Length: 329
Image (cartoon, rainbow, N blue to C red; front, side):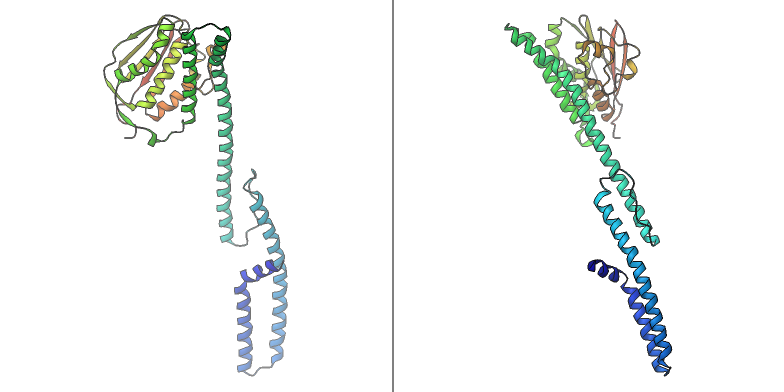
């Protein structure tokens, strides 16, 4: 309490000093003019009474305000409800309160957004776990069978590695421009680098590969372009039991066309949404809904655009449209 009294007096020191100055000047005036001291004493007693009365009322309000402010300091950062400040005594105090309200609102929005992002990552991780369990279970069955089938085991291990890379890129999805290296890339070289990685699956599933016109260059980031091509090609192989996959490049547009099972027309508008697997993914239970979502997100970052066309039973065509100039220009 003594500390509060001291703070109260210190914050109003100019008022009390001004009162003492006025009383002192009044007394000095009475002294110079040799006035009777009785009026001066009456005035002094009356003003002291008013000053004490003011101080008691002001101190009571001061204590209440300090308690309210302390409660705000202890709880408002964690609270989701708007902060309720004591009534401002001055216009300056009102503006300070408004500034604090805005800062607290921004802090709470950031905290809520962080919680939502955290929950989103947990949910997506659950989707990914569901996807990676398929090749792991297949490996377990191969081991338990006691039969030596290295080709099949290699294929399942490859899938596990692909899903691990997918999650790694998902965690890195909030890349900034410093993570990009936009340069002129040979389409033929990049496509063939990706195809070498998936050559095993073409032979395993007996798929044909047709490479049409691939001459030319595009402006892109090599690492992230390879990521997009891997996701698209992996989907094409995954949903094509027999037939062929055709890759072509014309006029800043790279297309990957398969003769697989295709995508239902009602699923097409949503294939790039996060977590959306569509009928095929649910039916075959081998899709997490993250691959195409991340592909479009990365494509936007590097200034490209993804489009998809498909018909049930006829196959799917995914097109990558490249910019004619650097995205940052």
